[in-house]
Image (cartoon, rainbow, N blue to C red):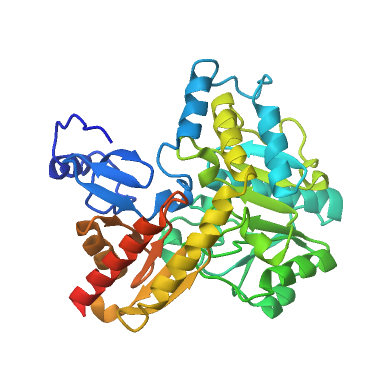
Length: 408
Protein backbone atom coordinates (compact mmCIF):
# COMPACT_ATOMS: atom_id res chain seq x y z
CA UNK A 1 0.00 0.00 0.00
CA UNK A 2 1.28 3.46 -0.82
CA UNK A 3 1.64 6.05 1.91
CA UNK A 4 -1.24 8.35 2.76
CA UNK A 5 -1.46 12.05 3.49
CA UNK A 6 -1.99 12.30 7.24
CA UNK A 7 -3.60 15.46 8.48
CA UNK A 8 -4.89 14.39 11.89
CA UNK A 9 -3.93 11.63 14.30
CA UNK A 10 -6.16 8.72 15.24
CA UNK A 11 -6.90 10.28 18.62
CA UNK A 12 -7.84 13.60 17.00
CA UNK A 13 -10.11 11.95 14.46
CA UNK A 14 -11.81 9.77 17.08
CA UNK A 15 -12.35 12.85 19.23
CA UNK A 16 -13.75 14.77 16.27
CA UNK A 17 -16.43 12.11 15.74
CA UNK A 18 -17.84 12.35 19.26
CA UNK A 19 -19.92 15.55 18.92
CA UNK A 20 -21.16 14.95 15.37
CA UNK A 21 -21.81 11.21 14.94
CA UNK A 22 -24.71 9.36 16.55
CA UNK A 23 -23.37 6.90 19.10
CA UNK A 24 -24.98 3.83 17.58
CA UNK A 25 -21.63 2.01 17.29
CA UNK A 26 -18.74 1.40 19.66
CA UNK A 27 -15.80 0.94 17.26
CA UNK A 28 -12.38 -0.25 18.24
CA UNK A 29 -10.00 2.72 18.59
CA UNK A 30 -8.36 2.32 15.18
CA UNK A 31 -8.83 4.82 12.31
CA UNK A 32 -8.43 3.07 8.96
CA UNK A 33 -7.20 5.19 6.07
CA UNK A 34 -6.24 2.65 3.42
CA UNK A 35 -6.66 -1.03 2.70
CA UNK A 36 -5.65 -3.66 0.18
CA UNK A 37 -6.32 -7.38 0.18
CA UNK A 38 -6.35 -8.66 3.74
CA UNK A 39 -4.52 -5.67 5.25
CA UNK A 40 -5.60 -2.24 6.42
CA UNK A 41 -3.52 0.76 7.39
CA UNK A 42 -4.39 3.45 9.93
CA UNK A 43 -3.68 7.17 9.67
CA UNK A 44 -0.33 6.74 11.42
CA UNK A 45 0.73 4.06 8.94
CA UNK A 46 0.31 1.05 11.26
CA UNK A 47 -0.82 -2.10 9.46
CA UNK A 48 -3.39 -4.62 10.68
CA UNK A 49 -4.56 -7.98 9.40
CA UNK A 50 -8.31 -7.76 8.87
CA UNK A 51 -9.89 -10.84 10.45
CA UNK A 52 -13.46 -9.47 10.30
CA UNK A 53 -13.88 -8.56 6.61
CA UNK A 54 -16.75 -6.17 7.24
CA UNK A 55 -18.94 -8.94 8.74
CA UNK A 56 -18.45 -10.85 5.44
CA UNK A 57 -19.03 -7.80 3.23
CA UNK A 58 -15.36 -8.07 2.21
CA UNK A 59 -15.26 -11.78 1.38
CA UNK A 60 -12.95 -11.01 -1.57
CA UNK A 61 -10.71 -8.69 0.41
CA UNK A 62 -10.29 -4.96 0.21
CA UNK A 63 -10.26 -3.51 -3.30
CA UNK A 64 -10.17 -6.80 -5.19
CA UNK A 65 -8.71 -5.87 -8.61
CA UNK A 66 -11.51 -7.45 -10.66
CA UNK A 67 -14.18 -5.72 -8.60
CA UNK A 68 -12.46 -2.33 -8.62
CA UNK A 69 -11.97 -2.61 -12.38
CA UNK A 70 -15.66 -3.42 -12.89
CA UNK A 71 -16.64 -0.40 -10.80
CA UNK A 72 -14.24 1.92 -12.64
CA UNK A 73 -15.52 0.78 -16.02
CA UNK A 74 -19.11 1.36 -15.00
CA UNK A 75 -18.38 4.74 -13.39
CA UNK A 76 -17.21 5.94 -16.80
CA UNK A 77 -20.50 4.90 -18.43
CA UNK A 78 -23.59 5.06 -16.21
CA UNK A 79 -24.31 4.91 -12.49
CA UNK A 80 -28.05 5.40 -11.95
CA UNK A 81 -31.26 5.46 -13.94
CA UNK A 82 -33.77 4.41 -11.22
CA UNK A 83 -36.09 1.57 -12.09
CA UNK A 84 -38.24 3.99 -14.08
CA UNK A 85 -36.11 2.84 -17.03
CA UNK A 86 -34.22 -0.31 -17.98
CA UNK A 87 -30.44 -0.34 -17.80
CA UNK A 88 -28.03 -2.51 -19.75
CA UNK A 89 -26.41 -4.20 -16.72
CA UNK A 90 -29.31 -5.49 -14.67
CA UNK A 91 -30.51 -8.45 -16.75
CA UNK A 92 -27.10 -10.15 -16.81
CA UNK A 93 -26.68 -9.65 -13.07
CA UNK A 94 -30.08 -11.17 -12.32
CA UNK A 95 -29.61 -14.08 -14.73
CA UNK A 96 -26.21 -15.05 -13.35
CA UNK A 97 -27.18 -14.60 -9.69
CA UNK A 98 -30.28 -16.76 -10.14
CA UNK A 99 -28.20 -19.45 -11.84
CA UNK A 100 -25.54 -19.31 -9.10
CA UNK A 101 -28.14 -19.95 -6.40
CA UNK A 102 -30.22 -22.47 -8.33
CA UNK A 103 -33.32 -20.28 -8.22
CA UNK A 104 -35.40 -18.42 -10.80
CA UNK A 105 -35.94 -14.72 -10.16
CA UNK A 106 -34.20 -11.79 -8.47
CA UNK A 107 -35.51 -8.75 -6.63
CA UNK A 108 -32.55 -6.33 -6.38
CA UNK A 109 -32.24 -4.11 -3.32
CA UNK A 110 -29.39 -2.31 -1.53
CA UNK A 111 -28.79 -3.30 2.08
CA UNK A 112 -29.18 -6.55 3.94
CA UNK A 113 -31.97 -5.15 6.08
CA UNK A 114 -33.80 -4.13 2.90
CA UNK A 115 -33.48 -7.67 1.60
CA UNK A 116 -34.99 -9.03 4.83
CA UNK A 117 -37.82 -6.49 4.82
CA UNK A 118 -38.48 -7.34 1.17
CA UNK A 119 -38.44 -11.04 1.97
CA UNK A 120 -41.03 -10.51 4.72
CA UNK A 121 -43.29 -8.58 2.35
CA UNK A 122 -42.95 -11.15 -0.40
CA UNK A 123 -43.69 -14.04 1.99
CA UNK A 124 -46.83 -12.33 3.28
CA UNK A 125 -48.03 -11.48 -0.24
CA UNK A 126 -47.44 -15.09 -1.30
CA UNK A 127 -49.42 -16.32 1.70
CA UNK A 128 -52.43 -14.22 0.72
CA UNK A 129 -52.29 -14.64 -3.05
CA UNK A 130 -51.12 -18.26 -3.34
CA UNK A 131 -51.67 -20.07 -0.05
CA UNK A 132 -55.00 -18.38 0.70
CA UNK A 133 -54.28 -17.13 4.22
CA UNK A 134 -57.03 -14.67 5.30
CA UNK A 135 -56.07 -10.99 5.00
CA UNK A 136 -53.73 -9.65 7.67
CA UNK A 137 -53.40 -13.00 9.44
CA UNK A 138 -50.13 -14.28 7.94
CA UNK A 139 -47.45 -15.30 10.41
CA UNK A 140 -43.72 -15.85 10.00
CA UNK A 141 -41.77 -18.18 12.29
CA UNK A 142 -38.26 -17.05 13.27
CA UNK A 143 -35.52 -18.30 15.59
CA UNK A 144 -34.48 -16.92 18.95
CA UNK A 145 -31.12 -15.12 19.06
CA UNK A 146 -31.51 -14.22 15.38
CA UNK A 147 -29.95 -11.22 13.73
CA UNK A 148 -31.59 -10.02 10.52
CA UNK A 149 -31.06 -6.25 10.83
CA UNK A 150 -32.30 -3.34 12.90
CA UNK A 151 -35.35 -1.84 11.20
CA UNK A 152 -38.49 -1.49 13.32
CA UNK A 153 -40.09 -4.57 11.77
CA UNK A 154 -36.94 -6.67 12.10
CA UNK A 155 -36.30 -5.77 15.75
CA UNK A 156 -39.93 -6.71 16.37
CA UNK A 157 -38.90 -10.35 16.08
CA UNK A 158 -35.48 -10.01 17.69
CA UNK A 159 -34.82 -11.45 21.14
CA UNK A 160 -31.95 -9.02 21.76
CA UNK A 161 -33.25 -6.43 24.23
CA UNK A 162 -30.46 -4.01 23.31
CA UNK A 163 -31.85 -3.92 19.78
CA UNK A 164 -35.48 -3.73 20.95
CA UNK A 165 -35.61 -1.53 24.05
CA UNK A 166 -37.14 1.86 23.35
CA UNK A 167 -38.27 1.13 19.78
CA UNK A 168 -41.81 -0.20 20.25
CA UNK A 169 -44.64 -0.59 19.46
CA UNK A 170 -43.58 -3.66 17.54
CA UNK A 171 -44.86 -5.19 14.33
CA UNK A 172 -47.10 -8.23 14.92
CA UNK A 173 -47.18 -11.44 12.92
CA UNK A 174 -44.03 -13.23 14.10
CA UNK A 175 -43.54 -16.34 16.22
CA UNK A 176 -40.17 -16.99 17.87
CA UNK A 177 -38.95 -20.53 18.53
CA UNK A 178 -35.58 -21.85 19.76
CA UNK A 179 -32.94 -22.22 17.05
CA UNK A 180 -31.92 -25.74 16.08
CA UNK A 181 -35.16 -27.21 17.50
CA UNK A 182 -37.30 -28.90 14.85
CA UNK A 183 -39.97 -29.98 17.32
CA UNK A 184 -40.53 -26.41 18.49
CA UNK A 185 -40.60 -25.23 14.89
CA UNK A 186 -43.20 -27.80 13.94
CA UNK A 187 -45.38 -26.81 16.90
CA UNK A 188 -45.30 -23.15 15.82
CA UNK A 189 -46.30 -23.73 12.18
CA UNK A 190 -50.01 -23.69 11.34
CA UNK A 191 -52.37 -22.74 8.51
CA UNK A 192 -51.48 -19.04 8.87
CA UNK A 193 -47.73 -19.59 8.46
CA UNK A 194 -46.35 -17.81 5.42
CA UNK A 195 -42.71 -18.69 5.98
CA UNK A 196 -39.98 -19.92 8.26
CA UNK A 197 -37.19 -17.32 8.23
CA UNK A 198 -33.84 -18.43 9.65
CA UNK A 199 -30.11 -17.94 9.31
CA UNK A 200 -28.49 -21.23 8.26
CA UNK A 201 -25.74 -20.24 10.69
CA UNK A 202 -26.44 -17.58 13.30
CA UNK A 203 -23.68 -15.00 12.91
CA UNK A 204 -24.29 -12.27 15.48
CA UNK A 205 -25.19 -14.89 18.09
CA UNK A 206 -21.61 -16.19 17.90
CA UNK A 207 -21.45 -18.26 14.69
CA UNK A 208 -23.91 -20.87 15.94
CA UNK A 209 -23.82 -23.90 13.62
CA UNK A 210 -26.95 -26.09 13.83
CA UNK A 211 -26.92 -29.83 14.18
CA UNK A 212 -26.55 -31.92 11.04
CA UNK A 213 -29.99 -32.48 9.59
CA UNK A 214 -31.57 -29.32 10.98
CA UNK A 215 -31.66 -27.41 7.69
CA UNK A 216 -32.87 -30.46 5.81
CA UNK A 217 -35.55 -30.83 8.47
CA UNK A 218 -36.65 -27.22 8.02
CA UNK A 219 -36.88 -27.82 4.28
CA UNK A 220 -38.94 -30.99 4.71
CA UNK A 221 -41.24 -29.38 7.29
CA UNK A 222 -41.94 -26.25 5.26
CA UNK A 223 -42.62 -28.29 2.15
CA UNK A 224 -44.97 -30.61 4.03
CA UNK A 225 -46.83 -27.77 5.76
CA UNK A 226 -47.13 -25.64 2.65
CA UNK A 227 -45.11 -22.60 3.73
CA UNK A 228 -41.92 -20.99 2.45
CA UNK A 229 -38.38 -21.63 3.65
CA UNK A 230 -36.59 -18.26 3.64
CA UNK A 231 -32.83 -18.52 4.27
CA UNK A 232 -31.02 -15.37 5.37
CA UNK A 233 -27.58 -15.92 3.80
CA UNK A 234 -26.51 -12.29 4.08
CA UNK A 235 -23.52 -13.18 6.28
CA UNK A 236 -23.20 -16.91 5.64
CA UNK A 237 -23.52 -16.85 1.86
CA UNK A 238 -21.29 -16.24 -1.13
CA UNK A 239 -18.38 -18.48 -0.24
CA UNK A 240 -17.95 -17.78 3.46
CA UNK A 241 -18.57 -21.34 4.70
CA UNK A 242 -16.84 -23.23 1.90
CA UNK A 243 -19.94 -23.43 -0.28
CA UNK A 244 -21.70 -20.77 -2.32
CA UNK A 245 -24.55 -20.89 0.23
CA UNK A 246 -24.42 -22.38 3.72
CA UNK A 247 -27.60 -24.39 3.04
CA UNK A 248 -25.61 -26.38 0.46
CA UNK A 249 -23.89 -28.23 3.29
CA UNK A 250 -27.14 -30.17 3.58
CA UNK A 251 -28.02 -30.08 -0.14
CA UNK A 252 -30.99 -27.84 0.63
CA UNK A 253 -32.59 -25.40 -1.81
CA UNK A 254 -34.84 -22.89 0.00
CA UNK A 255 -37.80 -21.15 -1.65
CA UNK A 256 -36.21 -17.77 -0.96
CA UNK A 257 -32.59 -16.75 -0.33
CA UNK A 258 -31.67 -13.34 1.06
CA UNK A 259 -28.25 -12.02 0.01
CA UNK A 260 -26.26 -8.88 0.75
CA UNK A 261 -22.90 -7.82 2.18
CA UNK A 262 -20.37 -9.67 -0.06
CA UNK A 263 -22.67 -9.20 -3.07
CA UNK A 264 -21.41 -5.61 -3.28
CA UNK A 265 -17.77 -6.63 -3.15
CA UNK A 266 -17.05 -4.13 -0.38
CA UNK A 267 -17.55 -1.33 -2.93
CA UNK A 268 -21.26 -0.51 -3.04
CA UNK A 269 -24.29 -1.75 -1.08
CA UNK A 270 -25.97 -4.55 -3.05
CA UNK A 271 -28.58 -6.98 -1.79
CA UNK A 272 -31.14 -9.25 -3.34
CA UNK A 273 -34.10 -11.51 -2.73
CA UNK A 274 -33.60 -14.57 -4.93
CA UNK A 275 -36.53 -16.97 -5.15
CA UNK A 276 -38.61 -19.45 -7.05
CA UNK A 277 -40.64 -17.87 -9.83
CA UNK A 278 -43.96 -18.71 -8.15
CA UNK A 279 -42.90 -16.67 -5.13
CA UNK A 280 -41.53 -13.49 -6.69
CA UNK A 281 -44.26 -13.33 -9.32
CA UNK A 282 -46.68 -12.23 -6.59
CA UNK A 283 -45.19 -8.73 -6.87
CA UNK A 284 -46.73 -6.30 -9.33
CA UNK A 285 -45.66 -2.78 -10.37
CA UNK A 286 -46.05 -0.27 -7.58
CA UNK A 287 -46.23 -2.81 -4.75
CA UNK A 288 -42.54 -2.69 -3.88
CA UNK A 289 -39.51 -0.78 -5.12
CA UNK A 290 -36.19 0.94 -4.58
CA UNK A 291 -34.73 3.92 -6.43
CA UNK A 292 -31.19 2.54 -6.13
CA UNK A 293 -31.99 -1.18 -6.17
CA UNK A 294 -30.52 -2.74 -9.31
CA UNK A 295 -28.69 0.43 -10.34
CA UNK A 296 -26.09 -0.03 -13.10
CA UNK A 297 -23.08 0.43 -10.82
CA UNK A 298 -24.42 -2.10 -8.31
CA UNK A 299 -25.31 -4.53 -11.10
CA UNK A 300 -21.83 -4.24 -12.64
CA UNK A 301 -20.10 -4.92 -9.32
CA UNK A 302 -22.58 -7.65 -8.41
CA UNK A 303 -22.00 -9.38 -11.74
CA UNK A 304 -18.25 -9.29 -11.12
CA UNK A 305 -18.81 -10.85 -7.69
CA UNK A 306 -20.91 -13.63 -9.21
CA UNK A 307 -18.22 -14.18 -11.82
CA UNK A 308 -15.62 -14.73 -9.09
CA UNK A 309 -17.88 -17.28 -7.41
CA UNK A 310 -18.74 -19.12 -10.61
CA UNK A 311 -15.21 -20.55 -10.74
CA UNK A 312 -15.57 -22.18 -7.32
CA UNK A 313 -12.10 -20.92 -6.34
CA UNK A 314 -13.24 -18.95 -3.31
CA UNK A 315 -15.50 -21.68 -2.04
CA UNK A 316 -12.56 -24.10 -2.21
CA UNK A 317 -10.26 -21.63 -0.45
CA UNK A 318 -12.75 -21.16 2.37
CA UNK A 319 -13.10 -24.92 2.79
CA UNK A 320 -9.37 -25.61 2.73
CA UNK A 321 -8.32 -22.68 4.91
CA UNK A 322 -11.25 -23.42 7.19
CA UNK A 323 -9.49 -26.65 8.05
CA UNK A 324 -6.45 -24.66 9.21
CA UNK A 325 -8.68 -22.33 11.22
CA UNK A 326 -10.50 -25.24 12.88
CA UNK A 327 -7.27 -27.07 13.70
CA UNK A 328 -5.68 -23.94 15.11
CA UNK A 329 -8.63 -23.13 17.35
CA UNK A 330 -8.87 -26.73 18.51
CA UNK A 331 -5.27 -26.53 19.68
CA UNK A 332 -6.18 -23.52 21.85
CA UNK A 333 -9.06 -25.18 23.69
CA UNK A 334 -8.08 -25.25 27.34
CA UNK A 335 -5.39 -22.63 26.71
CA UNK A 336 -7.71 -19.64 26.99
CA UNK A 337 -10.33 -20.83 24.51
CA UNK A 338 -13.34 -22.35 26.28
CA UNK A 339 -14.97 -23.51 23.04
CA UNK A 340 -15.58 -22.55 19.44
CA UNK A 341 -17.78 -23.13 16.41
CA UNK A 342 -16.34 -23.08 12.91
CA UNK A 343 -17.67 -23.55 9.39
CA UNK A 344 -15.33 -22.64 6.54
CA UNK A 345 -13.57 -19.33 7.21
CA UNK A 346 -16.01 -18.31 9.92
CA UNK A 347 -15.67 -18.95 13.62
CA UNK A 348 -17.13 -17.90 16.93
CA UNK A 349 -14.54 -18.26 19.67
CA UNK A 350 -15.56 -18.37 23.33
CA UNK A 351 -12.68 -17.04 25.40
CA UNK A 352 -12.36 -18.00 29.06
CA UNK A 353 -14.25 -15.14 30.79
CA UNK A 354 -11.48 -14.96 33.39
CA UNK A 355 -9.22 -13.60 30.65
CA UNK A 356 -11.52 -10.74 29.71
CA UNK A 357 -14.58 -9.76 27.76
CA UNK A 358 -14.79 -10.14 24.01
CA UNK A 359 -14.24 -6.40 23.73
CA UNK A 360 -11.08 -6.55 25.85
CA UNK A 361 -9.67 -9.47 23.86
CA UNK A 362 -10.43 -7.58 20.62
CA UNK A 363 -8.55 -4.53 21.88
CA UNK A 364 -5.53 -6.66 22.88
CA UNK A 365 -5.50 -8.28 19.44
CA UNK A 366 -5.75 -4.84 17.83
CA UNK A 367 -2.63 -3.74 19.69
CA UNK A 368 -0.90 -6.81 18.21
CA UNK A 369 -1.99 -5.92 14.67
CA UNK A 370 -5.07 -8.16 14.33
CA UNK A 371 -8.59 -6.81 13.86
CA UNK A 372 -11.55 -8.89 15.07
CA UNK A 373 -14.92 -8.05 16.60
CA UNK A 374 -16.56 -9.20 19.77
CA UNK A 375 -20.12 -10.31 20.17
CA UNK A 376 -21.94 -11.33 23.35
CA UNK A 377 -19.96 -11.88 26.54
CA UNK A 378 -16.45 -13.19 25.97
CA UNK A 379 -17.01 -14.35 22.39
CA UNK A 380 -15.10 -13.00 19.41
CA UNK A 381 -15.82 -13.60 15.74
CA UNK A 382 -13.27 -14.48 13.09
CA UNK A 383 -14.25 -13.97 9.45
CA UNK A 384 -11.17 -13.08 7.39
CA UNK A 385 -11.34 -12.31 3.68
CA UNK A 386 -11.37 -15.48 1.58
CA UNK A 387 -8.19 -14.15 -0.04
CA UNK A 388 -6.19 -14.66 3.16
CA UNK A 389 -3.13 -16.90 2.81
CA UNK A 390 -2.41 -19.92 4.97
CA UNK A 391 0.62 -18.08 6.38
CA UNK A 392 -1.45 -15.02 7.33
CA UNK A 393 -4.10 -17.18 8.95
CA UNK A 394 -1.55 -19.18 10.92
CA UNK A 395 0.09 -15.92 12.02
CA UNK A 396 -3.24 -14.63 13.30
CA UNK A 397 -3.79 -17.83 15.27
CA UNK A 398 -0.31 -17.53 16.81
CA UNK A 399 -1.12 -13.95 17.81
CA UNK A 400 -4.38 -15.07 19.39
CA UNK A 401 -2.47 -17.70 21.36
CA UNK A 402 0.05 -15.06 22.46
CA UNK A 403 -2.68 -12.71 23.66
CA UNK A 404 -4.43 -15.46 25.58
CA UNK A 405 -1.21 -16.70 27.20
CA UNK A 406 -0.34 -13.15 28.23
CA UNK A 407 -3.59 -12.98 30.17
CA UNK A 408 -3.45 -16.54 31.53
